[in-house]
Image (tube, rainbow, N blue to C red; front, side, top):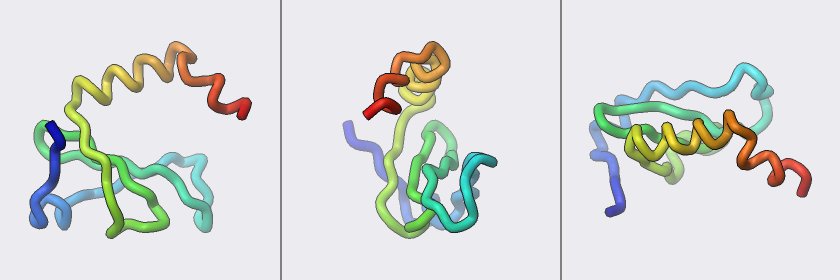
Length: 75
């Protein structure tokens, strides 16, 4: 099921991005609303977003911590 945000939820997002992000560079930014984790592009704060359940996002973070996606860095 595709999850979406209401306009009110979208306007209430408090974005956070990595301290490694540069001021002029694009970076994935993250925010949350109850029951959902939201990812967006810091270059395009009003652009499209991806919405995940906490369980889905936790699974991604677990895989990232274990190095399961490190091979994408070598491309």
